[in-house]
Length: 545
Image (cartoon, rainbow, N blue to C red; front, side):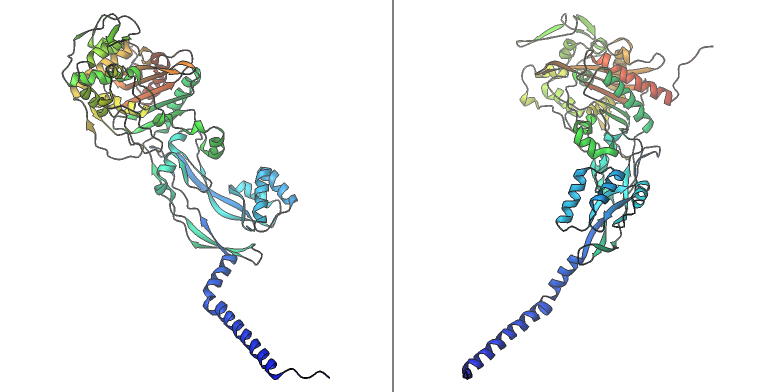
């Protein structure tokens, strides 16, 4: 028989077990009492998930109340449990899902994400097709889908939203806070395996505000039709047209090429160049369109007078070692004929009478090389360098629209100075009161407007004219030297009708093929736009009985 263990060993074992029991009780107390909140929150994170509820975005209207963008009720389908390959195949055929999308969803389940979107923002018809499959693992949550009823029309202005319902471009982006509202929160309760059991709304979303624009959809449609046809005819890669009221209201803003905001993610991935709004972001040399500013500046400063005759030197002028030529030899031209025939030499002779600082001041006063502040993202500034950077020939080249850069909307606002009695107005898409800035006197603006009428009647802009009602404008052709050779930017800016304008219009066509003069490429587009405006305002020809 083995002897009973030593009493000291028994007592030591007893205290050892008592000590570990005490530690265990302390640990349990720490976990259940001191860290109760921590583990409660951990448990809640495992069984409860908070998701964002998208608010209803505000509707965008044109000036006549026509809908440009609207959020309609939709559904988002999600999976309660993992789907089988057969169930995925049924969904793929009904929803048009790609195999990559299906593979991505399977990977989410493998990583433990039990709440997985099948397809978001589907309409009632698609929802019913899914329900008809009889897959009880799929649930639906109410959502909104952004719809653009006119597709490509005014897409660069209105813009587009992403899958999360937030603005990505155009007014949808710049007015996100106004249109977007405030999102809500929903609570998803899950079982021990992570599958959804119940969904509750924790915080209701707040809808966004509606937005009313100065845009006129009818004028927009006419401007886009004229611009797109004209640009395609000369195989231009990019073009723009803007129609504004004298108060600076943007009535139409067309950019070629265009895109469908209903298909924004796909179009952006395939053709990112189509998303660019050329009306505010295409930077180009204005060419001879800037010559009406030459005239306005010289007249305002009293450096030339109406009826004065300008020596155009047989169509060439030397500045230092540089010779600048006209497109044809002119000798003595009246002040009006310098603009009407777009004489480079005549324009240079006129601006030579102004100091560099004074001429630069007028270019800036007409807001060239400056953002106009129109309510759209992506507006470019252009470039008009300060006189301290000028060389001997800089002012001469500036006077014929070379060596500095502008945007179409800058030129539209600049010609508005001539049409509106000498006042520059801020271009805007959102109605409001914007104080004008006087640039030249009403008398000078009237004189220059009359000269621009001559451009259309008997000068380089004859293809812009209507036979029964007057228009005023100026052509421009800027040469571009590229690695692929000479290319051009053709433009026309003008006011309609004459002598009491209501609209200012700018048309710019970049890199046309074949024809390239502004008077033969851009002026006919201007004519098509004012033809619509004449019909819209019932400005028909008078028929004599």
